[in-house]
Length: 168
Image (tube, rainbow, N blue to C red; front, top):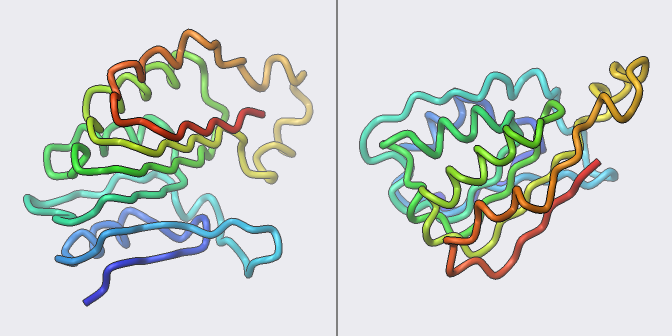
């Protein structure tokens, strides 16, 4: 039975996540985002990311990678039907510029819900097409700096071994 799904960056939509949630042995959902790989899809296909999950969703999932807004991923992690506590690896690529407050709230949710997390990767750099559309805005107004104190929200994750933050 299916245990690992590896998709192009923007292929995990709400509908696909709902379909995959019923796979009893699915352990990993990951994405590829190398520049030399085939087309990654359109970021608009991955938004909004609001899958409707039923009880028993993703019974064995431990690695989850998604390209979505932090508020959407935060809602998913809070969903009682999503197995946040059994995740050991979480990879999130944002689709829009995020504020320090949004990142802090997101990390607080991870600290509360993803108690077995060992590996966290958070890419805060936005897709090129979105970045280009914001060029008329001065860079200091486009991207809010994430403060080091924001990472303190993860202090309760005693199993966390790998933390990777990619910041614009």
